Image 1 (cartoon, rainbow over the protein chains, first blue to last red):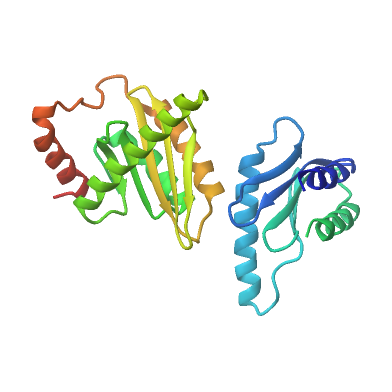
Image 2 (image 1 turned 180 degrees about the vertical axis):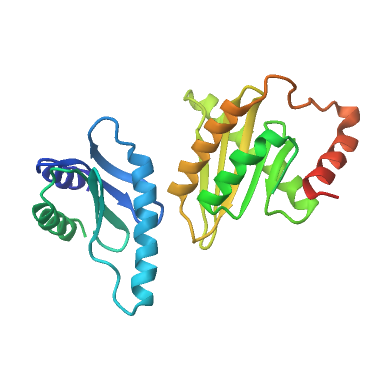
Length: 116
Length: 153
């Protein structure tokens, strides 16, 4: 299973502008597998992104929709993308300002389908 | 939140706010309580401190037997609550943090902000003073005095 995770992460990190990708436990916010550029605090991003996704899920459910299927957080110098890969796992990508968001989104959704 | 030493308050308060932990106990490796949040009864603090210190001591001994470095943290994930227990070095000696968290937060967040609190505590230790060593003959009076301070009574 870990090989499958790593394969998916490597596929994502090959994309232009993707500085790192992680498979994270949705409930705990702990890193399951990661492929990150040096200097990215994986543990912190995993914990905070999982928390954000959980709160988003609560918000979206309260609005009467299903659970979120894709989260895109755009910041001044990059973007954070999160996709649930099954009920327990999140696929997270960290992009810099050169990321091709459309391509990254397609790749992430495909990878999430494989992992889920 | 109550702390025996004022410099512990701000790092602990930040941790509590960020991690959304329900109960937190900071103690020395001997089980002497330094700060607490969320406990309402002295007897619970005494039990939790004694058990926490004993668990850390047991796991450290287990690591020694196995020939590995001491475990960094110990977690127990229950159905509705989780327990996080971790020992760390401070200029005042080895301390232990015991955190109980609910479903509104996660182990990852607790661990992340706990590590930050440890950094802040380590950097914020005043040069003077120190956690007083409790001698056996003073133990009971020191314990009662600490508990009075921790509960503001």
